[in-house]
Image (cartoon, rainbow, N blue to C red; front, side, top):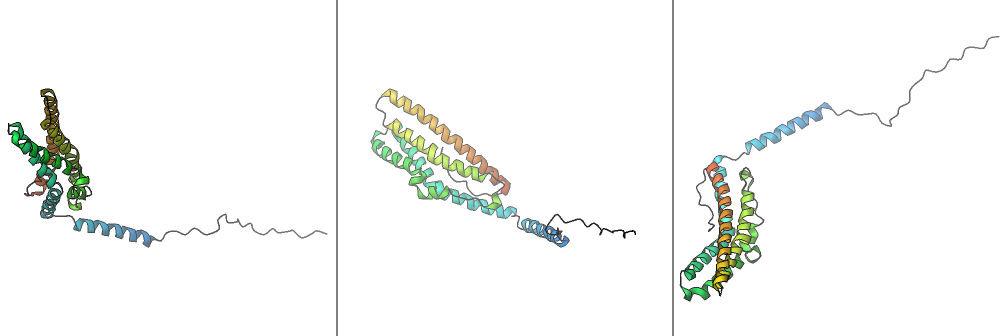
Length: 209
């Protein structure tokens, strides 16, 4: 007697993942494209005009001047006081020493609130194409390092008691003034380039040399 043939059930492969993979709907990609296009259009619509950039540059120069003017004006007064004494007006020696000592301290941000505030200044986005941030850094360096050093050298020259110490002090002072002037020239180059590009006619902040 023959036994009936045993039929095996069809083989069904087992899933190796616990959940079915879900594809991102096409509408999500379409929405992202629309969003990107919208951001681009908004940025283009807010592109500042030439007149707006010129106006913003005028405001910027005013802000720079507010931060630096007391140090810059003091440095100018120090140079004037030094020149008087060196020209032979010895009666002005004591007054010159006092003026220069005060002005040297006033060019340090820690002693000058407007200058200290300016160290955190942020240039408006409409002027981002110009390296004004670098100019601002150079302005702080001009004040806190160059002008301070030069005025300290002025004091050394005024207080020299021998021809030798006077000659050394004057040589150091001349080098310090050249450094001030070089920094000033670099700053003015950035500012004048921005002026020419925007058509702004506002006076530049004053930095003596």
